[in-house]
Length: 161
Image 1 (cartoon, rainbow, N blue to C red):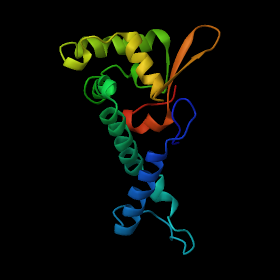
Image 2 (cartoon, one colour; image 1 turned 45 degrees about the vertical axis):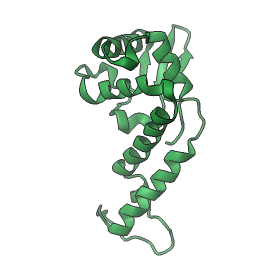
Image 3 (cartoon, rainbow, N blue to C red; image 1 turned 90 degrees about the vertical axis):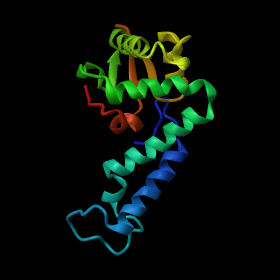
Image 4 (cartoon, rainbow, N blue to C red; image 1 turned 90 degrees about the horizontal axis):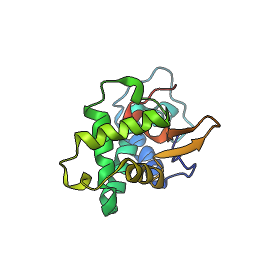
């Protein structure tokens, strides 16, 4: 669940997931049915909690955007997911190339006046998302597909296909 699209594991989201989960367990902010066993340091429902996972991914993404000057356009892609997507065909873990390109074209059109987006193209956004492990490009015989890393499933509100 914490893998990037290129199958590498990002340590930061893992550490943050454990940190947020321990906070939930310590403060009992979520109530889960069942008796918590005495043995585990961290009871499972706390680290599979959707909010803990969202917080871990949020911090990881903020670091990607903040620490690399050229990554600012990715923020607009995520903002588009958060605020603008009406058609749920874009909110899938795996997108056909044509749908993925339409999505990025929509992002470019929506944020074309923003300073960080003025020189971006579908190709530069695609490369940025791939390089940062957010998306993986694969060819399945009938064309390319783009898969979002499972790490971003809940953060972007993605559904299975």
